[in-house]
Length: 233
Ligand SMILES: O=P(O)(O)O[C@H]1O[C@H](CO)[C@@H](O)[C@H]1O
Ligand SMILES: O=c1cc[nH]c(=O)[nH]1
Image 1: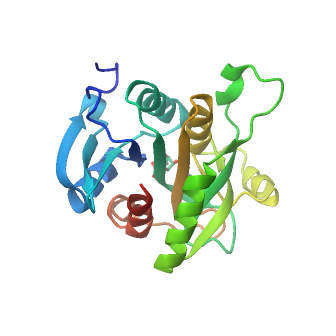
Image 2: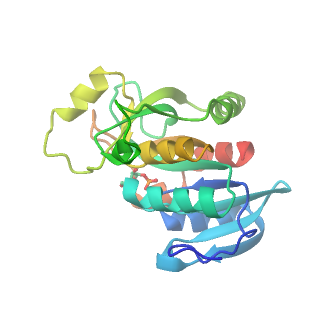
């Protein structure tokens, strides 16, 4: 049974799926870390793979960029393929002077400028949070690995190129550590379907210092974050 965006049949996808935005990061991860790998999706080049990591079955699939894209893929994985956990592994921009290039953010909560939660017709504003069970495991693993990490709130934005240059300061002043474009929709979808989700981010650029990493580095070298996700999958 396929969906419009995923040609996998039921049973081909593990209970835990790691989701980078970039399908080439999914390919790199599967080729670098998984054994007994089988590719389950090529539709729209949104590559998906299942294999084993230290004997445990895990899947890795690209989510694409932005909330409409991860909204589609995560909804289908949770509702059609019996996936229980999705761990997004992405890149982000830092809003804070003390959150440096290549630091890891373990996302606890997520603000948004998107209307994604409007569909639930709630009588107020929905606060999107990660699964505490997954978050705790990620924090313990980050401590074990002795990497620089921060736990906190981020902004999931519909916009990469913001016209309002002042928006960074506004979100930073409310405690947001950085910006990416998917976690709000992922966390809301997980909550709606009674599943679990977490996001790990590596800082790829700083909106404070304007330093940035290269596209190749984003695809292939954010390995500490990738290893934490694989270890807790
Ligand atoms: O590196 P990924 O996971 O794609 O995440 C970030 O990078 C993209 C923007 O360049 C957006 O998808 C944003 O959330
Ligand atoms: O959404 C994103 C991702 C990385 N860097 C940014 O500045 N924004």
